[in-house]
Image (cartoon, rainbow, N blue to C red; front, side, top):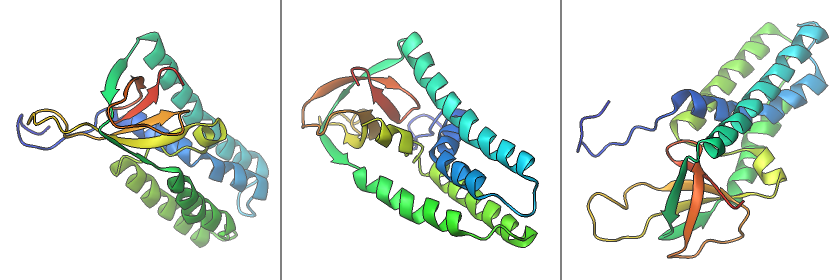
Length: 191
């Protein structure tokens, strides 16, 4: 843990973030289950893929339910907001399509794919991209990076947040109340 005043911010809820990252790559496991694998019998492979698709998403919805149940809300003030719809396209084309087309017909190729997937999971987790989820997009949510207003206070305005909302835009000065899914990811309460 960094000492107070060191200027670093350590994102909490590490296990939650990891499971949220795994939920973001769950469509890949659905595609792999449909495609199959010649090395592992279908029963085991499909069961593993189903587990990797269902458990992280169930955890995500449990995290949302827990935040709502405990009223884990914050008021966020928008200084500036960036829409990240393009991240979904990058996510789809950079991750899902190459991994789907990957040949899993030998142990070497399967191992290489699993290792590459582990690198991507680590990068998503380390770079706080755990808000990337195709289910949010399918349900009509948008993701904005919200920068707090510059208020001249040295203790505030340093941390940006990812806000998941159904709004099509967020304007400067707007206030919104959101449930905390992690230290930097929020789901708007009215969404």
